[in-house]
Length: 449
Image (cartoon, rainbow, N blue to C red; front, top):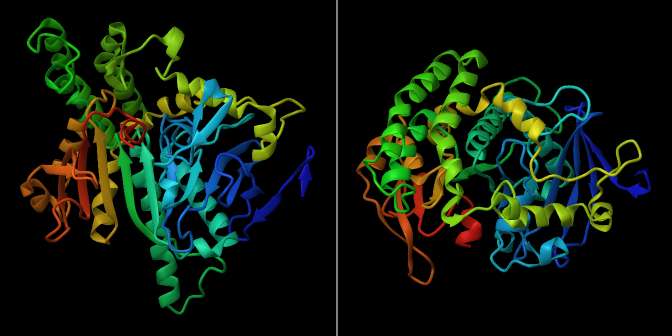
């Protein structure tokens, strides 16, 4: 089909009639591998952009990985062009260079902008609804490319993706079980709906269990490996610690009620009172080892975010990727969509407990890897370890008893610390694994590829 001079393939699915995919086959970024890009159209005014790269090595056998950045409302182009994708942004956004450390070296990768914003109408404003959009996307994509449907499938996410990933995995698992029930009973299976071979979930510096994680902000800021305040018993640290009980009480109310009327106050209070004071220090909250001059570095403290916007707003790149015009005007790419961010904030979505769905997934054999750079303030490594230690799962006793041992690279260098349960004699990987990565911030694949 063609639209506005762009030719694309239209993918539809009889079980998901409200969804369709417009598919292009670009040859940029990594022209030596098979690629697809395009949009999942949820409605006339809601679209999710994606970009797929086959593995550089044995794609027919390599796992399939879905990568999601956070925000909410931030594009997964950050992961693609800045962290772990097959090419890295350079030259102020005028070009890219090959990333030799890309995850696509050994995995088939889908980079998906998981939350869609409505140009007119209602923007998706909560993770459970967004997870169903992702499930529909996977059904359309795997229905078209069945050769990938039998591969081990992994959900990988970062930051607010710690909220997304468990719920996406839970939605996939729920639908898989329903399909299994239909196939094992006398009921007719749903035609063309495929089981998704869900194997694991990876979360990097994620926000997953905010009540526990928020409580560790003073510990990180005052007693962490890179303290942002000189005196751990000084007035700034005392003030931070004094905010924790109210924050945790409000988040607890959100957990108990699930109502936005409880969750929004928790989000507003915790974010302003625990992270607000940090804004005056001139540091990068995603890597407190670094200074941040927002006038030069941008709102996210990384100049490369602006470079990505420059690259993806190039008319030639837009045409190659299949980015269509709206009402005759070019669509302007932004790294983060503030309308989506606000919509989620004012539902209190980020204050819900995403960890509560994990025990059932662990019970049914889905593995979890939680990793965190030790220089990130926003979703610090202490909080991620703490919620894992508290989680009531089949691995709780083993995980809590397991030593925090050295995490080594292939060359033998100690790059962090690891705690794992469910791996048998293997102590550095298991069904439930935590890794703290040394000398890394929020974007671990960028700092320690």
